[in-house]
Image (tube, rainbow, N blue to C red; front, side):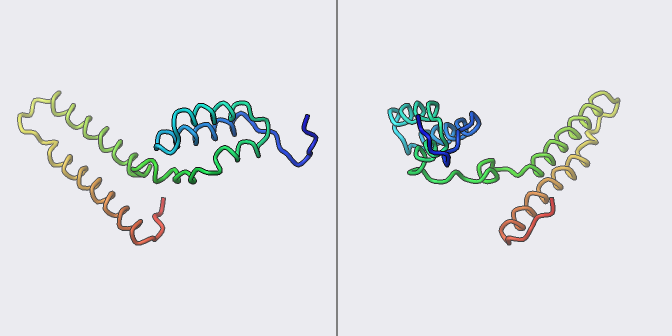
Length: 133
């Protein structure tokens, strides 16, 4: 039994986080299947946090969450709102007696707002200034 009081016990959440890092490294081709299996076995049998850090010491730091996702959350929300409004407009046109496809005008404005939002975000990030969200 280890009696070193400086060692901290590992939690299940810490083990899961390290297991995800190992699995991601395997998916990136940094580890072979045998290495993944061996490391995952050691992850789930680890008792202390220093045992967990040893298992990922030779792996690169994970990318920040914002760059892994791809599309920023405010832009995804904007796109979802546009989709809902567009669906409602087209449904209203289908239910109505008008032959002319009148929703084309608001749909163009909605699409333009989404494109401009994406461009302004890209320029704001490229210019490294804070985006107010």
